[in-house]
Image: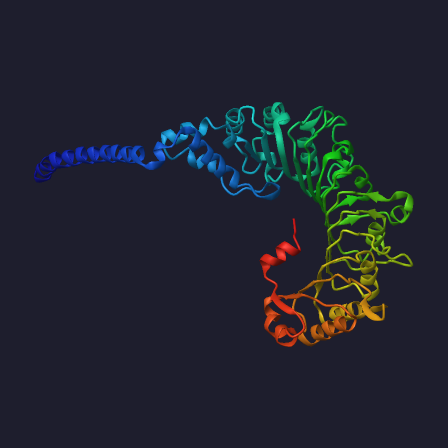
Length: 462
């Protein structure tokens, strides 16, 4: 009886409290609405707000297809007004993502395709990584049917596939297609040995891709998948596997990054097979060539690149010049040479120096033995009008030593250069050796710290 009386006495206050709580929530919503409506950003015209959203969306894009977060989803969940503006801004919905594990909702992909209207789209597909694919709902075919009609709108295509089979299935979406907006193709394959006999449709991109400029490939011999006729407009190639004959189809190439070069020495060694790349400005080779000595040297000998400005050699184990070093002044426009390899000996570096006569900036591996090789090269001279003149790299102005150079070896190298009649304006060394090297060498050259930022500028990587 007492408990019933207690509950009866508590009921009115609790009911009143619930009513007050509901009123408070209503007032909070009304207050938030008033704050949103009176905030300075609320007075922005929809067009300006849409431009801000577009700029945020564009800023999350990084080189070659990476992205940071889904800004379009965030801005569309702030206020009703923002959501309406976001939905009516097609550029926000042009980045289509397909992930197989966990699978991206087909409804979400369809929403992006519809909201992007007729704008060019980016397609980021990560496929074939499902560990339990047999037990999962396979929506692969519905996905292909959904995306296929929109492939002509694709401007950037990024495919990260576990298998060659899935990679080819994606590329087959371009069968009998013209890709008027396609600018970038990036292919990545974790296991490229399945379905070795499978090929893409022979009419892939048969309508052409006139705006294609960038091609990236990792883990697969991409020449077997892409037709050579689409390479005529390509300006940048980044890959870890490539056959040299591809370069006969890339007359507009500006930047070439090779991570695992595959060359046939007997083909490249003949003068009839010169590779002419008249606009190439950057060439980076990162390879361990122990099993195929001579291939890199044959490639450089066969390369005709009069506009080449930057040559970067990383981890090149050997350069077998034989009796045919690079001809004198082979690369007349070359100004920056980077040799980041601890395996090359003096004669191999001299083979490069002969063809790269006019460099002004040199980046060099700074081990003690390597500095001795460099001392020999920089110290060689010839007599011109009765005075010593540097035989190699007479225009050299700045030397960047990678690693931790020995201070005394560095000093001997600088003295040898001065004795040969050459001068250096600047010596750059990394932080660990900066004070020691500066103490020994500042009377001969300006010593500057080789910061990571400066390193990224002087020795860029893709």
